[in-house]
Image 1 (spheres, helix red, strand yellow):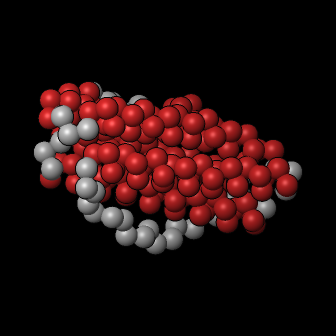
Image 2 (cartoon, helix red, strand yellow):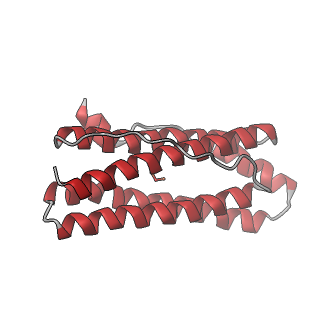
Length: 172
Ligand code: FEO
């Protein structure tokens, strides 16, 4: 396997696991703040990020690459408000989008068609990730400090359920 691509995918596995850790930390923060629904939303996000790492892990192995798991950096542990956490989420997802786009650009340069194909799923996924964070930010900007609004927001996020990412479903 192309070494530059192998390295970039290993870095992406690390970034996805860092993302999982970040969202689990956000979930813990919101449990402590009494927002169980928001915590649930971030726990689902935590599982999705682990799926993203697993998809890349499986992909690297299926291409004859070598997975190298590096240390996962520490994550923040508290946020000022739900709005602060979702704004951080959006900023983080934009960085992840950039990393995915960079892998895709590298795969194009190196004529690695299989990696371009795999990255296409992630490119679509990132559109969804950014869109959902943006919509929640819009809602929170409308709610401001309205207690009932925050109560309803938390209730809505309590309904989010986890579905295993589609590339993992077909792999089984
Ligand atoms: Fe795996 Fe949220 O990007």
